[in-house]
Length: 422
Ligand SMILES: Cc1ncc(COP(=O)(O)O)c(C=O)c1O
Picture 1 (tube, helix red, strand yellow):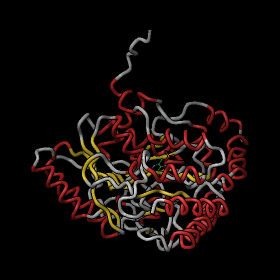
Picture 2 (spheres, rainbow, N blue to C red; picture 1 turned 90 degrees about the vertical axis):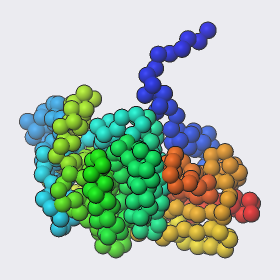
Picture 3 (cartoon, helix red, strand yellow; picture 1 turned 135 degrees about the vertical axis):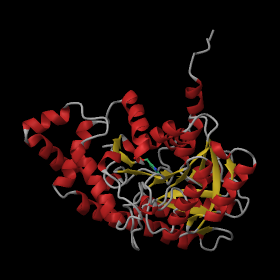
């Protein structure tokens, strides 16, 4: 007889995430070319750089011992200073005051930062406005906190300010405005849509959040996970640069894409009043993310290993992106109703399929694609449960993991699967 296990409501809320289903499919068919996983390229992971940085940490026994000891809750100060200096240098001009190092907290990947921010801001039933589509792990995170994700329409320049404004007004009319705590956007090469929030829209979104804060404080979460993976065009300032009072924008960043996800160091730059609550939550979890990993990343900067590696990464990913775009041009360009944007960074291509074609997890395309030996992320996973309508006829393709040859074979297989359904 099975007895009911006394799991918390929260554990039920987190339940099965779409990512597990995709991983199951990929593992069940080993020959499969997976264009699904958002993993980074195995071939360019920085083995030698990591060896050198670790050697630097352990070259001095005192430093080595310190690195093997507990660190601080906020993380290793020299690394916090390094990431902040990098942010400030990249952002250039700030509308108001620059962030201070006390506002920087290191976490185990930026997912931990997003999670802590969720925990610090959201009670069950609270709302986060998200670009539609958005990072599906974040949608799962909100569901786990029993919070609501409401989708806001995007176009080629990212979240549409008028749509954001309308959504806030609609929620005000329905008496739900005070439940809205934050606006979430991956402002560089959005996962999955690949669009980058334009400079003007960065300013507008921050301005809308500030204006609507009269009805209850609204934060903007600027998830900058892909900022470093730009392959062409000039960098844009983070949304923090447009936050005159520094009270609105939370920046979440990570070394997962720009160096190594296995090292698992991410960070947040927080408005001052959020530092206390978030630090308290973090103390109750781990009183500091792995110290050795932070020392290691700090040594990567000290030894000047970061920038050259980033250059290698950018070149390698750009070549893979071009391989995917060329394969799409060759195999998909003449399929009616199929369209894609040409990204300038990130790890993905977002494919629009013929209107109404069901590419969802239970749909026909995934069956045909698996039979042809290729896997993608159903776009449907990436839409918040409310607001902008979810599209089943969109898919996310990643060029991060596979070789250029496999990317080409994968796109050819996908094109066969799509044509079978037309
Ligand atoms: C948009 C976005 N944010 C955050 C993350 C989390 O990265 P990590 O927790 O490894 O720092 C990812 C990873 O794929 C991502 O795509």
